[in-house]
Image 1 (cartoon, rainbow, N blue to C red):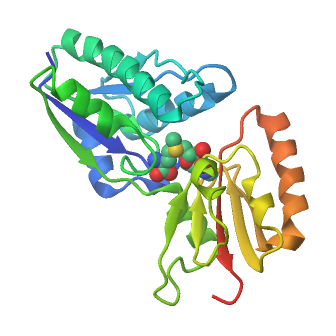
Image 2 (image 1 turned 120 degrees about the vertical axis):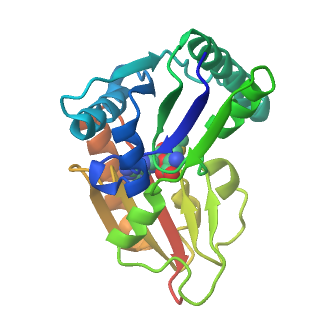
Image 3 (image 1 turned 90 degrees about the vertical axis):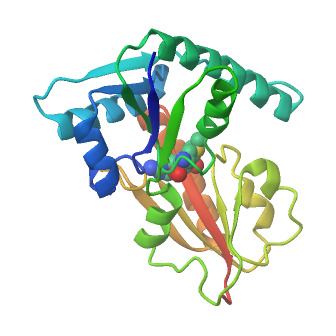
Length: 248
Ligand SMILES: C[S@@+](CC[C@H](N)C(=O)[O-])C[C@H]1O[C@@H](n2cnc3c(N)ncnc32)[C@H](O)[C@@H]1O
Protein backbone atom coordinates (compact mmCIF):
# COMPACT_ATOMS: atom_id res chain seq x y z
CA UNK A 1 0.00 0.00 0.00
CA UNK A 2 1.02 3.59 -0.60
CA UNK A 3 2.88 5.15 2.34
CA UNK A 4 2.57 8.85 1.58
CA UNK A 5 0.20 10.92 -0.55
CA UNK A 6 0.79 14.54 -1.50
CA UNK A 7 -2.27 16.69 -2.18
CA UNK A 8 -0.48 18.74 -4.76
CA UNK A 9 -1.85 22.18 -5.67
CA UNK A 10 -1.08 22.81 -9.34
CA UNK A 11 -2.43 26.36 -9.76
CA UNK A 12 -5.21 27.44 -12.12
CA UNK A 13 -4.26 25.45 -15.21
CA UNK A 14 -1.05 26.59 -16.86
CA UNK A 15 2.26 25.00 -15.78
CA UNK A 16 3.77 28.50 -15.46
CA UNK A 17 1.76 28.86 -12.23
CA UNK A 18 3.29 25.80 -10.57
CA UNK A 19 5.30 26.68 -7.49
CA UNK A 20 8.93 25.58 -7.35
CA UNK A 21 7.97 23.14 -4.56
CA UNK A 22 5.21 21.54 -6.67
CA UNK A 23 7.48 21.35 -9.73
CA UNK A 24 10.32 19.67 -7.80
CA UNK A 25 7.88 17.21 -6.26
CA UNK A 26 6.45 16.30 -9.67
CA UNK A 27 10.01 15.82 -10.96
CA UNK A 28 10.78 13.46 -8.06
CA UNK A 29 7.59 11.37 -7.95
CA UNK A 30 6.77 8.62 -10.43
CA UNK A 31 3.10 8.01 -9.64
CA UNK A 32 0.22 10.47 -9.91
CA UNK A 33 -3.49 10.31 -9.21
CA UNK A 34 -5.84 12.37 -11.35
CA UNK A 35 -9.65 12.59 -11.16
CA UNK A 36 -11.19 11.40 -14.43
CA UNK A 37 -13.59 14.11 -15.62
CA UNK A 38 -16.06 13.12 -18.28
CA UNK A 39 -17.93 14.99 -21.00
CA UNK A 40 -16.99 18.59 -21.71
CA UNK A 41 -14.91 18.80 -18.54
CA UNK A 42 -12.59 16.08 -19.86
CA UNK A 43 -10.34 18.97 -20.88
CA UNK A 44 -9.58 19.49 -17.18
CA UNK A 45 -8.22 15.93 -16.96
CA UNK A 46 -6.26 16.47 -20.17
CA UNK A 47 -4.74 19.66 -18.77
CA UNK A 48 -3.44 17.75 -15.73
CA UNK A 49 -2.09 15.00 -17.99
CA UNK A 50 -0.29 17.45 -20.25
CA UNK A 51 1.10 19.36 -17.28
CA UNK A 52 2.70 16.11 -16.09
CA UNK A 53 4.03 15.39 -19.56
CA UNK A 54 5.56 18.83 -19.77
CA UNK A 55 7.40 18.45 -16.43
CA UNK A 56 8.28 14.76 -16.65
CA UNK A 57 9.33 14.72 -20.32
CA UNK A 58 10.51 11.25 -21.26
CA UNK A 59 11.15 10.00 -17.70
CA UNK A 60 9.04 7.01 -16.66
CA UNK A 61 5.91 7.74 -14.63
CA UNK A 62 2.40 6.41 -14.21
CA UNK A 63 -1.00 8.05 -13.87
CA UNK A 64 -3.99 6.45 -12.16
CA UNK A 65 -7.24 8.05 -13.30
CA UNK A 66 -9.90 7.97 -10.59
CA UNK A 67 -13.53 7.52 -11.73
CA UNK A 68 -15.04 9.96 -9.25
CA UNK A 69 -18.82 10.39 -9.67
CA UNK A 70 -20.57 13.75 -10.05
CA UNK A 71 -22.42 14.96 -6.96
CA UNK A 72 -26.04 13.86 -6.83
CA UNK A 73 -28.16 16.93 -6.28
CA UNK A 74 -30.26 16.43 -3.16
CA UNK A 75 -32.56 18.72 -1.23
CA UNK A 76 -30.08 18.76 1.65
CA UNK A 77 -26.85 20.27 0.32
CA UNK A 78 -24.64 19.37 3.29
CA UNK A 79 -25.83 15.77 3.27
CA UNK A 80 -25.33 15.37 -0.48
CA UNK A 81 -21.78 16.76 -0.25
CA UNK A 82 -21.06 14.42 2.66
CA UNK A 83 -22.27 11.41 0.71
CA UNK A 84 -20.34 12.48 -2.37
CA UNK A 85 -17.13 12.77 -0.35
CA UNK A 86 -17.68 9.33 1.20
CA UNK A 87 -18.06 7.82 -2.28
CA UNK A 88 -14.88 9.54 -3.48
CA UNK A 89 -13.03 8.45 -0.33
CA UNK A 90 -14.00 4.84 -1.04
CA UNK A 91 -12.71 5.04 -4.63
CA UNK A 92 -9.47 6.71 -3.56
CA UNK A 93 -8.98 4.25 -0.69
CA UNK A 94 -9.39 1.27 -3.02
CA UNK A 95 -6.81 2.77 -5.38
CA UNK A 96 -4.36 3.45 -2.53
CA UNK A 97 -4.63 -0.13 -1.26
CA UNK A 98 -3.56 -1.50 -4.63
CA UNK A 99 -0.50 0.73 -5.03
CA UNK A 100 2.91 -0.68 -4.18
CA UNK A 101 4.89 2.54 -4.75
CA UNK A 102 5.93 4.44 -1.59
CA UNK A 103 4.76 7.92 -2.60
CA UNK A 104 2.32 9.52 -5.03
CA UNK A 105 0.98 12.96 -5.90
CA UNK A 106 -2.72 13.76 -6.24
CA UNK A 107 -3.04 16.71 -8.60
CA UNK A 108 -5.43 19.36 -7.30
CA UNK A 109 -6.62 22.36 -9.27
CA UNK A 110 -5.61 25.71 -7.76
CA UNK A 111 -4.97 25.47 -4.05
CA UNK A 112 -6.11 22.41 -2.07
CA UNK A 113 -7.44 24.56 0.78
CA UNK A 114 -9.88 26.62 -1.33
CA UNK A 115 -13.25 25.07 -2.26
CA UNK A 116 -11.80 21.62 -2.58
CA UNK A 117 -12.95 18.53 -0.72
CA UNK A 118 -9.79 16.43 -0.82
CA UNK A 119 -8.51 17.43 2.61
CA UNK A 120 -11.79 16.15 4.07
CA UNK A 121 -11.61 13.03 1.91
CA UNK A 122 -8.12 12.29 3.25
CA UNK A 123 -9.43 12.72 6.79
CA UNK A 124 -12.06 10.04 6.09
CA UNK A 125 -9.42 7.72 4.63
CA UNK A 126 -7.05 8.40 7.53
CA UNK A 127 -9.72 7.19 9.96
CA UNK A 128 -9.67 3.82 8.18
CA UNK A 129 -6.06 3.41 7.03
CA UNK A 130 -2.62 4.32 8.24
CA UNK A 131 -1.38 6.77 5.66
CA UNK A 132 0.86 9.80 5.75
CA UNK A 133 -0.25 12.81 3.72
CA UNK A 134 0.84 16.36 3.10
CA UNK A 135 -0.76 19.40 1.46
CA UNK A 136 1.35 21.29 -1.07
CA UNK A 137 -0.05 24.81 -1.63
CA UNK A 138 -0.86 26.02 -5.11
CA UNK A 139 -1.73 29.39 -6.58
CA UNK A 140 -5.51 29.82 -6.40
CA UNK A 141 -7.62 31.10 -9.28
CA UNK A 142 -8.72 34.13 -7.24
CA UNK A 143 -5.11 35.29 -6.91
CA UNK A 144 -4.52 35.14 -10.64
CA UNK A 145 -7.87 36.88 -11.27
CA UNK A 146 -6.98 39.81 -8.98
CA UNK A 147 -3.45 40.11 -10.40
CA UNK A 148 -4.66 40.12 -14.02
CA UNK A 149 -7.30 42.73 -13.14
CA UNK A 150 -4.67 44.84 -11.32
CA UNK A 151 -6.93 44.99 -8.27
CA UNK A 152 -5.88 44.85 -4.66
CA UNK A 153 -8.10 42.48 -2.72
CA UNK A 154 -7.55 44.20 0.61
CA UNK A 155 -6.83 47.76 -0.52
CA UNK A 156 -7.77 49.71 2.59
CA UNK A 157 -7.13 46.85 5.00
CA UNK A 158 -10.71 45.80 4.38
CA UNK A 159 -11.91 42.28 5.11
CA UNK A 160 -12.17 39.92 2.17
CA UNK A 161 -14.63 37.06 1.99
CA UNK A 162 -15.15 34.04 -0.21
CA UNK A 163 -18.53 32.89 -1.41
CA UNK A 164 -20.41 30.47 -3.59
CA UNK A 165 -23.92 31.38 -4.85
CA UNK A 166 -25.40 29.57 -1.86
CA UNK A 167 -23.89 32.03 0.61
CA UNK A 168 -23.71 35.08 -1.68
CA UNK A 169 -27.48 35.20 -2.18
CA UNK A 170 -27.95 35.44 1.59
CA UNK A 171 -26.10 38.77 1.77
CA UNK A 172 -28.28 41.88 1.97
CA UNK A 173 -25.52 44.22 0.77
CA UNK A 174 -21.95 43.91 -0.31
CA UNK A 175 -19.94 46.08 2.04
CA UNK A 176 -16.50 44.59 1.49
CA UNK A 177 -14.84 42.78 -1.40
CA UNK A 178 -16.17 39.29 -2.08
CA UNK A 179 -14.66 36.61 -4.30
CA UNK A 180 -17.26 34.28 -5.80
CA UNK A 181 -16.49 30.72 -6.87
CA UNK A 182 -18.64 28.09 -8.58
CA UNK A 183 -21.44 30.47 -9.60
CA UNK A 184 -23.48 28.98 -12.39
CA UNK A 185 -26.46 31.20 -11.67
CA UNK A 186 -25.29 34.78 -12.39
CA UNK A 187 -25.91 35.62 -8.74
CA UNK A 188 -24.23 39.01 -9.30
CA UNK A 189 -27.60 40.06 -10.80
CA UNK A 190 -29.00 40.35 -7.27
CA UNK A 191 -26.64 43.23 -6.52
CA UNK A 192 -26.98 45.32 -9.69
CA UNK A 193 -28.56 48.21 -7.81
CA UNK A 194 -25.54 48.62 -5.56
CA UNK A 195 -22.54 50.77 -6.56
CA UNK A 196 -20.20 47.86 -7.14
CA UNK A 197 -17.30 47.08 -9.37
CA UNK A 198 -16.98 43.61 -10.88
CA UNK A 199 -13.93 41.79 -12.15
CA UNK A 200 -15.08 38.61 -13.89
CA UNK A 201 -12.70 36.08 -15.37
CA UNK A 202 -13.10 32.77 -17.18
CA UNK A 203 -10.37 30.15 -17.69
CA UNK A 204 -8.03 32.48 -15.80
CA UNK A 205 -4.34 31.88 -16.21
CA UNK A 206 -4.82 29.66 -19.28
CA UNK A 207 -4.46 30.38 -22.99
CA UNK A 208 -8.26 30.89 -23.20
CA UNK A 209 -8.48 33.41 -20.37
CA UNK A 210 -10.96 36.25 -20.69
CA UNK A 211 -11.75 39.13 -18.33
CA UNK A 212 -14.45 41.78 -17.96
CA UNK A 213 -13.95 44.63 -15.51
CA UNK A 214 -15.98 47.72 -14.63
CA UNK A 215 -19.12 48.97 -12.86
CA UNK A 216 -21.48 46.01 -12.29
CA UNK A 217 -24.45 47.93 -13.64
CA UNK A 218 -22.63 48.50 -16.97
CA UNK A 219 -20.93 45.12 -17.28
CA UNK A 220 -23.60 42.63 -16.18
CA UNK A 221 -25.06 42.17 -19.68
CA UNK A 222 -21.63 41.83 -21.31
CA UNK A 223 -20.73 39.12 -18.79
CA UNK A 224 -24.00 37.28 -19.40
CA UNK A 225 -23.33 37.29 -23.16
CA UNK A 226 -19.75 36.13 -22.66
CA UNK A 227 -20.93 33.33 -20.33
CA UNK A 228 -23.37 32.08 -22.94
CA UNK A 229 -20.83 32.25 -25.77
CA UNK A 230 -18.04 30.49 -23.92
CA UNK A 231 -20.37 27.80 -22.58
CA UNK A 232 -21.48 27.06 -26.13
CA UNK A 233 -17.97 27.24 -27.56
CA UNK A 234 -16.12 25.14 -25.00
CA UNK A 235 -18.95 23.12 -23.49
CA UNK A 236 -18.08 24.14 -19.95
CA UNK A 237 -17.35 27.39 -18.16
CA UNK A 238 -14.80 27.87 -15.44
CA UNK A 239 -15.39 31.32 -14.03
CA UNK A 240 -14.70 33.36 -10.96
CA UNK A 241 -15.45 36.95 -10.02
CA UNK A 242 -14.76 39.68 -7.55
CA UNK A 243 -17.34 42.25 -6.44
CA UNK A 244 -16.20 45.28 -4.49
CA UNK A 245 -17.79 48.58 -3.45
CA UNK A 246 -16.86 51.25 -5.98
CA UNK A 247 -15.57 53.64 -3.35
CA UNK A 248 -13.00 51.14 -2.02
C1 LIG B 1 -13.93 23.19 -7.02
S1 LIG B 1 -13.46 24.86 -7.10
C2 LIG B 1 -11.71 24.70 -6.97
C3 LIG B 1 -11.00 25.99 -6.64
C4 LIG B 1 -9.49 25.79 -6.63
N1 LIG B 1 -9.09 24.95 -5.53
C5 LIG B 1 -8.74 27.12 -6.57
O1 LIG B 1 -7.96 27.33 -5.63
O2 LIG B 1 -8.89 27.92 -7.50
C6 LIG B 1 -13.70 25.18 -8.80
C7 LIG B 1 -14.03 26.64 -9.04
O3 LIG B 1 -12.85 27.39 -8.92
C8 LIG B 1 -12.86 28.48 -9.84
N2 LIG B 1 -11.72 28.29 -10.75
C9 LIG B 1 -10.73 27.41 -10.62
N3 LIG B 1 -9.83 27.54 -11.60
C10 LIG B 1 -10.27 28.55 -12.38
C11 LIG B 1 -9.80 29.18 -13.55
N4 LIG B 1 -8.64 28.80 -14.14
N5 LIG B 1 -10.53 30.19 -14.09
C12 LIG B 1 -11.68 30.59 -13.51
N6 LIG B 1 -12.18 30.04 -12.40
C13 LIG B 1 -11.49 29.03 -11.84
C14 LIG B 1 -14.22 28.41 -10.53
O4 LIG B 1 -15.11 29.21 -9.79
C15 LIG B 1 -14.55 26.96 -10.42
O5 LIG B 1 -15.94 26.74 -10.53
